[in-house]
Length: 285
Length: 167
Image 1 (tube, each protein chain N blue to C red):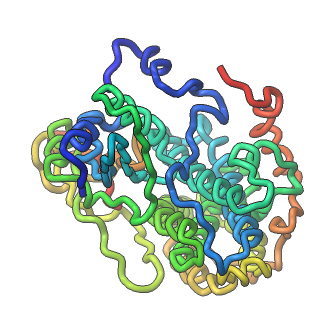
Image 2: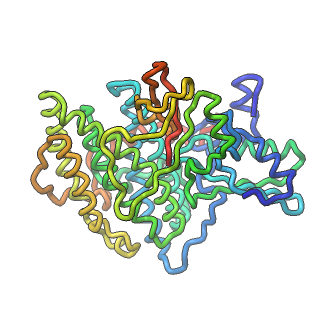
Image 3: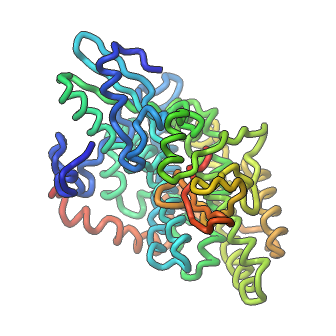
């Protein structure tokens, strides 16, 4: 479509509201068949989609905080694109969770109107990074785990979940390459970059255990995350070897974000993410 | 893929992509189906990437174009599976990308069985310089103005250019 001026492009649509949070954005699953397979417990499907959707939403939000703070413009663009892909996955997953749950909340209600204790993301997703090395270490762990997980979703008992997984695999493959590339560059770089990259790996290691702790709902969905561990370990070993970095000792069991136990970092980032939507409920302009 | 009466399908095929306006939705391979039944038109599209912010614009543009062509009853459906691949960009679409200075994608990677392999270091890509034709070019950044493009540079004419990444 061509428009005479840019303002016309923003306003001359047959939708009533544009460019306000939570409005003007159509349901990301618009027109996708929403039936839930009869053999699935809808509550299980909702709970599982919420876990994976919250991981993507909170990780995306943390990545967005690096925009205008990255060391190079190209990295800012890369981080923004990774954040956008994860936000897209979050929208699909939260919408699917809303379709499956009794309350039938939409993606916006789930994103903006839940308290920290209702979020089901792993604690890895919520950590704030103050050093670029810490960011890429966390991104490497997150993307390596999520890529293995999304790949298994192709066999999920829900066709929508399977489609989200197949699509996400292509995206997260690029995200993981980006993170691994930086871990290798910094680890196998100068004495200073090597030391800071090793610090970052050591700091993220205690957050790994939680990623593989299975919950009953995951097992009922046929998606036990503990089965992803060999693939995860093989990739981390490959990257750390290329980066001349030392693999830390075995990580502890980790937190329980899946049960709603979070660090203060989640409350802090939800304040930023939800504040505007909550101050103007249903706002449109 | 287009199975409708020519009229509605032809109208839908003229709608362009908001991010790559030199391409129609059909060139890009995201227009999967157009059906017309008793005046009602059902268009099926698929997103390029999960987070593609243009999807809503594309739905709106499709409805507008079909409304203008006299179709009052238009439904735009989204299909997630099978996931979009750059292999669906048509030959015509590839020519238009190259003419606009954007290197078209090579064949999408075929995945071996088992876990997705990790490639360390820049991938070898068949991305010739769209300006001078130099076949070997270097990666500047794996992401560009949109998630579907990367930034490369030609070692001969020194010009940077965008390349649509194979997925």
